[in-house]
Length: 371
Image 1 (cartoon, rainbow, N blue to C red):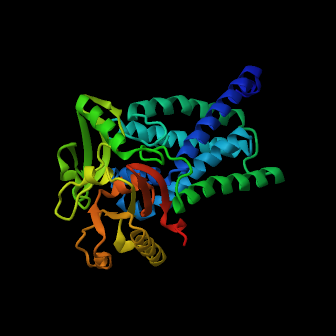
Image 2: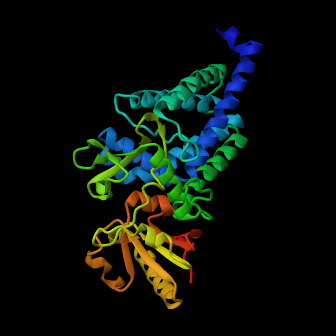
Image 3: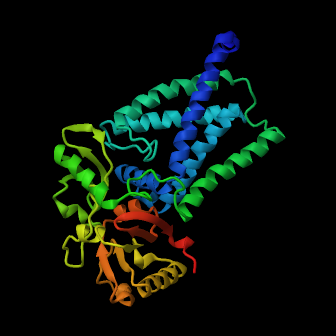
């Protein structure tokens, strides 16, 4: 076996496997680190499916850490920084995710693993096949560097480890407190909301789109058609995935087909709002009852400044519009939207989406609002 490890062809194979693993980890970690909200939502689905709801309060820190760790692992693999230690982590990682995706195939169904964030969507079957390919590669790399010492860090390796850790964890942290530097979602800057919705509806008419939601109380899954708006009850239903009825393996985004705005009476106002002429400010207050005081002050000032300029301002929230917390906004247009769609629209709990003639021209996290 030692002779095999030192053979020239095995070294070439291990080198190729290391590069391949590194590139996959870097790509996967990066596209998720720039969108920690997307990863957090997928992880939340996993926690609920595995009856680990006690982890829900920690889903965002865990999301940032997991994405950063994956990106860091890829960087250390490609630059051969403490390769012996990282090869062990890569094997353990691939074993864990291979088992997890195997369970997702039928035992505990989860259609969208989120392994490549919103950049590339893979079904559970495709993800399992991917992991079956990568697992042997990680074992080959691990065996190649088996004789090396595990914790023998040189000064250069220690420096590079700190740099990679800062970059990997910093990217996810920045994206959470501000906004993703790269937006893989349909409602990015420069996109026309009405056009995106129209295209999605055209697809849904050609192929029957099914929305899958989980009952928050019982944990049971239920399928809805796009016309059935019962899933809009955020307190009762939690989105799991969206698929085409005749092809369970084909996944599509839960937006923009689910873009739905209603007023306090439940009347749909989507078309009227997205076709607003001129400047429109959509103020996102996902859960106003939990808003930080500094953010509240910023948004209040922003709202009244925008109103003084005769611009149209609306507030979008997932909460009951009759809550006393909203009394200070009397006279401002207020509407309801599903919490997940709000996060999809902005990728932050609180902030502003600026629209001109139906086209998104700017998004801003509450933390970045300045006067």
